[in-house]
Length: 165
Image (cartoon, rainbow, N blue to C red; front, side, top):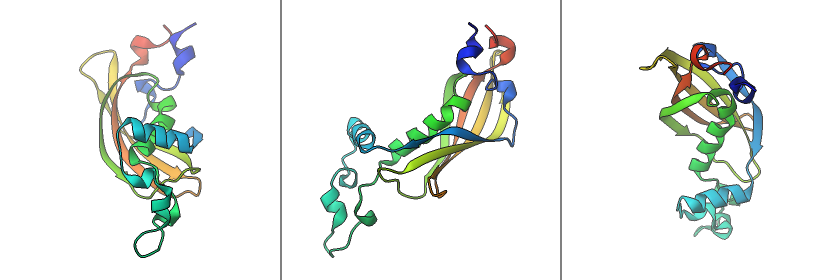
């Protein structure tokens, strides 16, 4: 077996062209256990993620967020980057940074998330076996509403050095 049999043949540095938009193949429905487990693991104690009674009423008697618990934004970001990973990270050597993260709307248990990525920039790395790619990631819910965007910079293997090993 060759390395490309595991990672894919079209996600080396040379394959990313500025302006290209990738619609990632998979969607992911957010399950309550996932949201609560990760939120607990990272010690986020905001009751809006855990206390359904609180979300259903407040001092004026009206509901917050339609009376539903909201998903922690960190979980949402991780889900969108994860959905993009098959196409943008399987040949990554290093994650360099993330910038301009925006969460535009709430996500609730049962929402299905989809991701898109646009190639903003490609440039040489300081090592000959890799290049740098800057992506803009977008996340949408099942109804098409955009709920996330952010830029991510990744060092990615060059096919000329890593391909078909």
